[in-house]
Image (cartoon, rainbow, N blue to C red; front, side):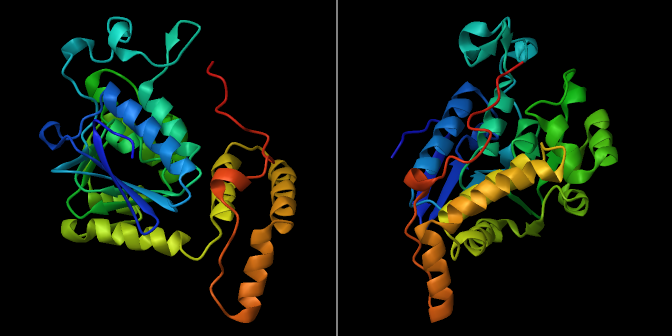
Length: 291
């Protein structure tokens, strides 16, 4: 079990539940959290015992945005270069929230958000590439960047309009206002709301509903196809990809088992594993180079 500084990890019943554990700081985002989240998704991708990942928070917040302890230099990467670390390209420091978001985007396991409280700034934007977002009835959200003198980060200018529409995304990012769970639900930012004490159980139930009866390799490939499909310009681009993926799956042991189980009216026991049996069929293999 990896040691994490800013989150607690529990793996049971096919689910990895990662809980931000800085409640006194409202789980604010710092360099240690960046490292922990990257390590978390490396770990869950490699662990065939994990079917899905749930991310939640402790205390009153899911994640209340960036840790502002550095004061006015919080977002000045040049002034904080020695402590920020992280990838660079051409002398430009990569937005650490974007590094995390793109890692979630590339996850081989479904990712669910159980937003237990305030989800502001990166606390909201890191949820955008997650597959299912659930909130407590009193959770609150905010894309507050313009009120801090900065701009949307973590690839949110790409994800947010695709999830809630351009006009809603512009409203939220221009105003920087914090809004309630009902508005988030109506806009499609979250898919369901729950009493706070029932949220995590509901997230676990949904995660198992999504994955328990499915072939893990098929789920991993479907996740990649659907998310990466948003980057394509024409259905033919996806046709080229899904033809290769479907052919690879069709000759795999999982397909034989899935068909036999259906015909024999029993639960399938899929033999293929995400850690070893993912076909090399995608035109994308790694995160695109930073420009």
